[in-house]
Image (cartoon, rainbow over the protein chains, first blue to last red):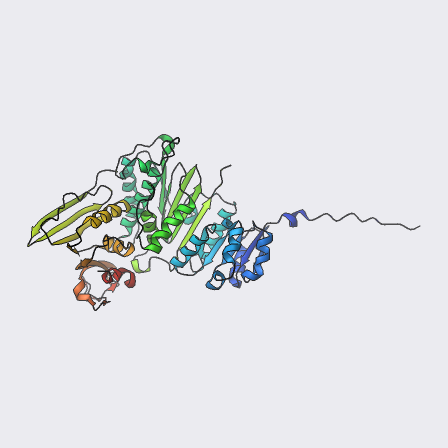
Length: 336
Length: 161
């Protein structure tokens, strides 16, 4: 008797089908090795040495996160802008060791590229890991804790009125008295805190019906009383490497594109256009902060809250304080 | 924020208005007390400035832009905070030609592990547009000190004057 064996149709491997892909465009073996260690085990890392080889993957998978080593050669690849424009490129993590001005220009010209991590950055692998974990939703985007060692004591304060910011600056001054850094470090940290508090207060829409920012109604030296719902959250602390300041508002009016434009405009134009623009800041404050920090992080939840974190490396010598290239990250949380 | 803590001290000497700024250049800075009628030169001394913020820079630029074009403007004893802003912001001088006569520069003594701010005169270090960075002795131990900032960036303003 002839028996026909019916083969059970092969079930597709569910794990394989849903395994998230991450595309690395780089010819640097060290980077791919580092990424294998960094990425969660369920991720599939696809490595392509150049844009030409990566093109079809990007076109076929418009949402695949891209980690790209944008060296000069890759930047000059034909069709890069078009490809990134069509791609959900806010998934792109941009790795580079070009000059800060070149990097800012690249980010400005490719609006979806919101994360820059230079290869030469101190603790590059650990910092890239933080970017990826935050970017791919494995960690909350909020807080200064990712940028300080676990032992660091972080001061957490709230600001209820802008005339009361002197109390915050006093606490900051006490914290700064504990660090050993070059002479103007303290002034810079105080200025950064003051600039961030000013933005947190003045960028708010106290009258949502008018959609008019407080900046349009107040001078910057006005005493402003904040409603309970408008209170500003301040964090600062230090470890053996960095002093970190993070300030969170309660309205979320800052847009990644605006912040990027303000920093880039001052960098590229040397401030020739540094004027108040449509009652918003001219970008001078962000530009000053960018100049004094090694790493700026913008955590944004549109319409809900904005957190800006500034990382200032601690050094006795001003000359050696900043790394050769800065990191800049924007994390945008979509409100459910 | 509280009102500005910028104090302006002025006097006229030999056709020049000598102005000393003391405190913070911020949003509340008020330059309306400065009048330039009848003077051909203005000398701004920044020795007493301890902080300048973004709102202060905007007000300062507007003030500089309002100065008469024919006025000879001199900046003297500029602390590092002012030097940094002049270098960062191309129109810190409001598009006016400014002569920078003296400024503070940070130096470091490795032996003492100590920073020392030194007052430098532009005429002593600039020749035909080239800057020669000095190596002054440490006031404590006499050891030659090293300039403690990025030379190309810090001295860039001397080429703008």
